[in-house]
Length: 301
Image (tube, rainbow, N blue to C red; front, side, top):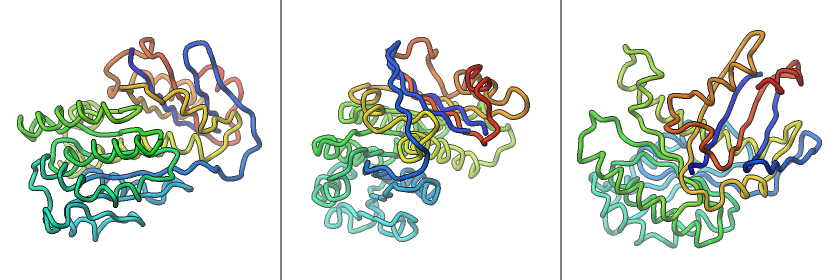
């Protein structure tokens, strides 16, 4: 069975966390802050780009950028930066070689431990297929999980046109990363071709890939840090994501009279999903909307 992450976006906010028929829901007043420490670690160029798009999108989350490329780190919007493999790469990057990325992370594991230690939830985001993301992300995940953090990987697989070598490196890295995270969400960039217009420029296609990573991380984080009418806390999220293995993500939007229902339908029929919702052993879903969203709309969704 595959875990399933679904996020329907409309206009109110209801969060719910369910494992089969056992639904864990707590009612809390809106407002306030969470004691949960959430850190998002972008690894490599793709992970760093995704973090840049997340900064400012969600409160009470710490952002880290981890890279072997010192120049890329200088342009990172993350408040916290970790230049790994300083002796191995001299800040010049991994050259597309995952073994260099892995060795760089091992060389700098004390720096990485500083980034993940004392966190409750660590997201590791990366674009698989390159050197630093493919090589270092599994090391970051291993250290985070060893530190007792709930560890969630949110990564992309390269477009087919990027070549067989890059795709093989991505698949190998994903197999390794899966061994060191509680939950792994993999988004295939090729599937994005189904949701973007045919005339989309290449640069915009990569931005869409970054934005999918952003929505996955921010979507889960907001469920924890922004109390809703039906609130889900970190313990609820942990019960679903801990030791869950592979997961999928669906995103939907809606407007008009049937906005919530349309958003939910779009989420569960998202082109990003590789397996039907019915095969999931657990689900996290979030519906966001304005104060005029009705109970009837949520029930239909």
